[in-house]
Length: 362
Image 1 (cartoon, rainbow, N blue to C red):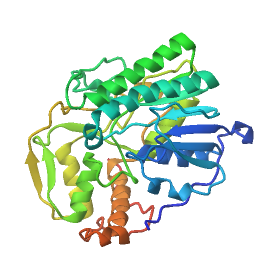
Image 2: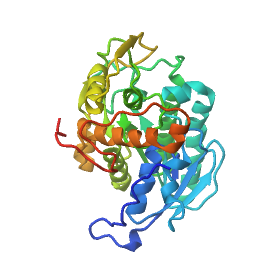
Image 3: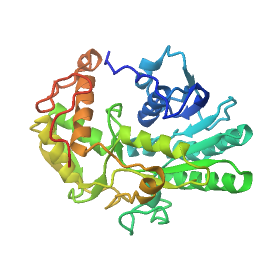
């Protein structure tokens, strides 16, 4: 079994006490982002109710929390109403990678729209503050660069990505309608590309794809010429943004961009992964998928000004942590039994959890 670091010790904000303790619902809590959020909330002293239908979430992501006295895990699909008593809601439930949402686009749309309706109904009944994990995909293939929150986007409403793009756009609409019509306190974050430990091996996202292929020594596929750009935010930085936004004054509803404004081409990312793994994998090229954005970089002035938030983890440092995670995963007995290739090792690194190599600032 893969070993994960234990939960961080309980901490409270300056001046905080046990009276600040809340019961917090996290939908999609067994997913990549959701599991890290559960860790953070528990470390901050809260009780956490983690809800997931395990379509893309994995019990492995939260197995280290099972038995924690302030953690509860519930199997539930947010397309169905949920009747619980909580103080705050983080709505993260939705497939978030093309591999998963194109596999079942109708369910993806239902999760975004019906899930938002059900969670907003719960928040309305409980008079609870609710957070929506929206996405930079609401900007589509942007004609404005970098993307600011007042940009309305350039989205193909009938393309293969529309189930996710338009589902999230509709969810934002519902959040702001509930805020205006029912006075529900809402917080909407637009998440840009995020990476880190607990990404799934097969989620189809560019960081995990490149790392897994490099560790296995198989060709790395780049779609298009590799000149399209993305911005990559390490998961710990993003989760800190979530918590800061949720704690912010009620009038700051969002949407608020959360992402790392550092911009890299896809080819640059591939070359950095090859360098850090010491892999001999070759780069191969295929046609660019339909509606794939050419540029993506957040303007985070609002998050910086109102939340005091700035990403701290440079891409090189974050990739090293992520490579070590995938190395452990691929080296586990379960993976070996399935015939996985022997992985390469992050250059100069050991397989010890939490190792960080020098040379991290971009």
